[in-house]
Image (cartoon, rainbow, N blue to C red; front, top):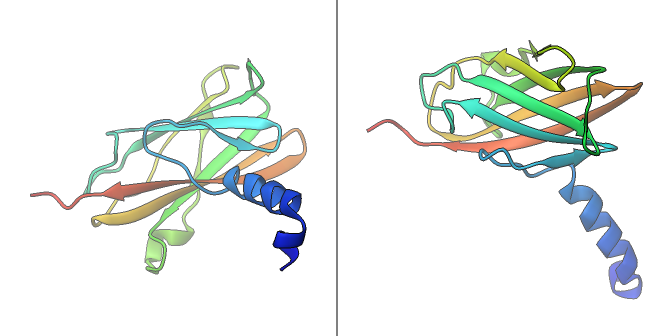
Amino acid sequence: MLFIKYPLALFVLSTAMAGCSGGSSDGTTQQAGDFFMSVNTTPNPPEVGSNAEVVATIKTGDQPSANCKVSFQQHMPGMEMSGDETVYNMVQEGGSGVYKARGGEFSMGGDWVLEFTLACDGTTQRVKFPYSLKWPE
């Protein structure tokens, strides 16, 4: 009822939620506060049995964000596994705003999420990038 009465509130809420959830395996950029983040993996998409290399690029506008601490966790939503709490700290390449790390093994096919924590300029943001892995044939 509230959203019928206040359509602008619905628009603002849906826009804010879109910037914090979603993601894709093709390097699509997502916004986290003032920062823009894109993620790619090698292999892309990750494969069952692999420990993918994860590369995150972070920018503010058109400029690389070099003053960030970036980490991620990987998990399957709705499936509790022993490695879900493992945090992978990413290392920056120079001042390029490009951060790299190798994640844990993707042990099975299905829906996975790489959930990043960005600590930049005194602000912490979380960004999720979902992946769907196929079972090997």
